[in-house]
Each structure stands twice: as structure tokens, then as C-alpha cells.
Amino acid sequence: MQEQISTSPSRGLHIITWGCQMNVYDSARMADVLRPLGYSPVDLPDNADMIILNTCHIRERAAEKVFSELGRLRQIREARKLEGKETLIAVAGCVAQAEGKELLARAPYVDLVLGPQTYHRLPEMVARIARAGGSVIDTDFPVESKFDLLPEEAAPQNEGNLTAFLTIQEGCDKFCSFCVVPYTRGAETSRPVASILAEAERLVASGVKEITLLGQNVNAFHGDWNGGTASLPELAALLHEKIPALKRLRYITSHPRDMEQALIDAHRSNPIFMPYLHLPVQSGSDKVLKAMNRGHTADEYREIIRRLREARPDIALTSDFIVGHPGETDEDFEATMQLVRDIRFASAYSFKYSQRPGTPAAGQPFQVAENVKEKRLAALQALLREQQDAFNASLVGTVQDVLVTGHGRKPGQLNGRSPYLQPVHFEGSPSLIGEIVKVRITAPFTNSLGGHLHEQESTAI
Ligand code: SAM
Ligand code: SF4
Image 1 (spheres, protein in one colour):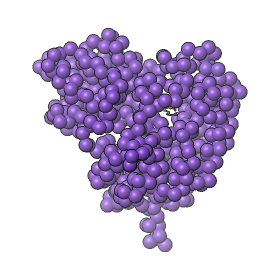
Image 2 (image 1 turned 180 degrees about the horizontal axis):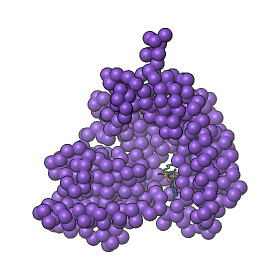
Image 3 (image 1 turned 60 degrees about the vertical axis):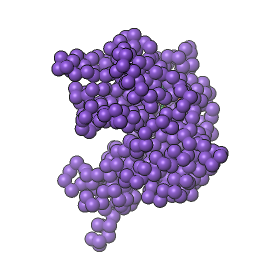
Image 4 (image 1 turned 45 degrees about the vertical axis):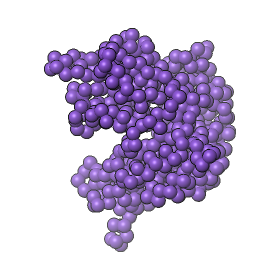
């Protein structure tokens, strides 16, 4: 995924974002931090006085992608120099955190290198460069929390400012064998509840109806509250109670180990929780799950799903899978296929295992051959695609609550979001934008649904 933040200029800022929703959130917050210095987002790097690459290190060739983009940005900087304009180039995010020093050695023209925990210090870094020139690298895990020091902006929002992300938890202490997150994002920390409530209130006051709470292990959340701590279901209850205009709540990404009964029960009792959960399982083989250090078995995962479906029978499930973890045999892969057949997912992400330097799995013997990984991934994706198609088809004829987020591509068409996070297209008046309306689903597409307004149908009868 690559996203670009943009509007119109004063001192131009262009941010290119790779990776997860948390990076999208971080990019918006970097824009907030730089706004008091006169920076506003611009569409093209050619018009930018500062360009930030916000990078992702989760899978292969991350650093190579960054270097190739930096080559392009260097040319832009040279062209701007001929016009007498300066351009600051910054690399942020997880590649910066993991490979900051190497990055500066290979691309000395980069002005700023900063990790995910230090972007609140951006103004200070920019000032240091203005004073002394040279490059600045800051990939500390600072004692101060960036959340205490960020300006009070409500960010980021999308889909006509009706939906928004809100980071509540960061970092990870789980150390899965394959994953760089504990090394790039640091130890697990939760944001205090009061600061989350304040940001959610600002978002909702600006028109947001649906919030997605973000965290690398969002369901391990335990934020300070009232002299103790609040868990994720307690935070969700507070959001529901204190912000009545907040209509919908989601959270991503959860770990099966932290899927406690209180959270499962909240899917039954808290009406703002959407019937949708992304719960990565990675593999269906107990042997591979153990080698991955996931801390649960395939049957324990099945049991969590059984309890979730008991609490909320219409819940749609999505997941992440890795094929070809070191030591994975045909039999292990078949166990993954069986788990997928047993559970039936509404959609899922699946990846070939990628060796990440410095992680335990990278040094293990019995790496799986590339062609075997490819074959397994194709088989898994075909099965997951079948299940996604079946799930979308199962909604035909049902009436769904759709949050109307904006105009569709065709004249007279509106776009919305189903409870299951699918885009829905239907005809209706633009005055419905921002409302939650009933839509009868008539057509399943691969990644979206078509329908028509239920009210219209009732008046026609
Ligand atoms: N915290 C989440 C969890 O525990 O499942 C996952 C966060 S990770 C940023 C997102 C996904 O990237 C993982 O669920 C995993 O499927 C995938 N991933 C992470 N490291 C990987 C690797 N080395 N190779 C392939 N996929 C990887
Ligand atoms: Fe990475 Fe998620 Fe495992 Fe943490 S729990 S190490 S973020 S895959």
C-alpha cells in the first residue's frame, strides 16, 4: 500500500506512506507536528520543501524500495536547487528505525532519519538542520511519550471525514519468530484513556461516525484510567457511554492470546462494535505455531472463534497467514488449509514467509524453497478467494446498515461502508452522505457490493 497526503501549499510538505494503517496515522500526525512551522501538504514532491518517506519493514525488499524512491527524490531535489529552492528529505518509520545508520551511509544526501517513536521531535530536528546543516538521525526509544507532546489535531480522517483511525497502543512484546515489529516499534505501551477519549471527542465533533482503534496488539491494550488501567472492552464501553454521536467502532490488529472473554462478550453487549474482527492466525499447524512462538494451538484458535460466533452470530472474520515459515512441511500446510475450511473467512491477507534480518526465524535451517512457497500461497489464496466470494454472495437479499461516505463513480450513485467493511454502491440523494441507511444488497462483486436503498423499495410497494 502506498498513500500520499495532500492538499494545498504554503511551505510544501509531501509524505509518501508505505505499510499498515498505523503508518497512515503516523504520517498524518507528522503533518500535524510540522504545521506550526508553516508546512502544509502538497500533491507533488516537485512542489515540496520537505519530503518524508514513511517506510515499512515488514516484508522483503523494503530497504531497496526506499533507495529506489530516494534516487527519484534526489533528482527532484537537484532540479529544485537549480531554481534556488531547498528541499529537506526525511526517512521515517520502521526501515529508518532498523537500518538508519546504513541508510545514511548509502544515501548521505538524506537530511533526517527518524523512527516511529520520535516524530514528535521533528520540529527540533528541522531547526537543528537549519542552524548547523548536515544530517540528523534520531531512532531512540525515548522515555517521553510522543502522544503527550503531539499537537491536539484530530487526524487522520478519510472517506469525507466520516471514518478515522486512532492509535491507542504501540509496540509488541510477543517476539514472533518471523516479525520485526518488536525491534522497530519497541516494547508494548498503551496510551492513557483520557488522551484517547479527548482525541475521539475531537474526531466525532468534526463529523466522524466510525473510529478504528489501532495498535500492533490492540487487544493487549491496558491504558491508565482512574488510578488503575482500562482494558479494550472497558475503553469501548467508555467511548460508547461518553460519545453518543460515535456510531461505529472497530479495532485492529488483535492477537489470539489476548482475545479475553470480556472482549468477546463486548461484541454481544456493546452496540457500537461492528460484527467484524481481524484476528491473525498465521498457520493451522501446531508445530509451525510453536516455531512461530505464537503461544496458542490451532484448536485454541478454533475455540476463540466458536465463542465469538456464540456471542455475535453474524460476526465476519478475517485473518493473516504466512506460508513457508522455516520447517513448514506439506502436512503443516494442509493443516492451514483445513483450518481455513473449518472456519470460513470473510476475507484474509496471506503472505510468503520473508526472511527478516535479526529475527529468530531468519537464521533457522530448513528454509522453504521459493517455488514451494509460491505453490502453497496460490492454493491458499484460491481457497480464501472462494470463501470471500461465498461470503459476499451470502449477503445478497439481506438489508445492511450502510454508513454513506460519499459520491460513487457513476452519476447519482453513492458509496458507503457495510458493517463488514465492504464498500457498497447504490443510488441515492447526496443528502444521505454522513447517514447510516438501510441498503438491500443485490449484487456481490469481488471487493464490493451493489444494492439499493431499502426505504425506496418500501415506498415503491
Ligand atoms: N500483530 C499482528 C499479529 O500478531 O498477527 C500482526 C502485525 S504484522 C504488522 C502484519 C502481518 O504481516 C502479520 O500478521 C504477518 O502475517 C505478516 N508478516 C509479518 N512478518 C512477516 C514476514 N517476515 N514474512 C511474511 N509475512 C510477515
Ligand atoms: Fe509481530 Fe504481531 Fe507477533 Fe508482535 S504479535 S511479533 S507484531 S506478528
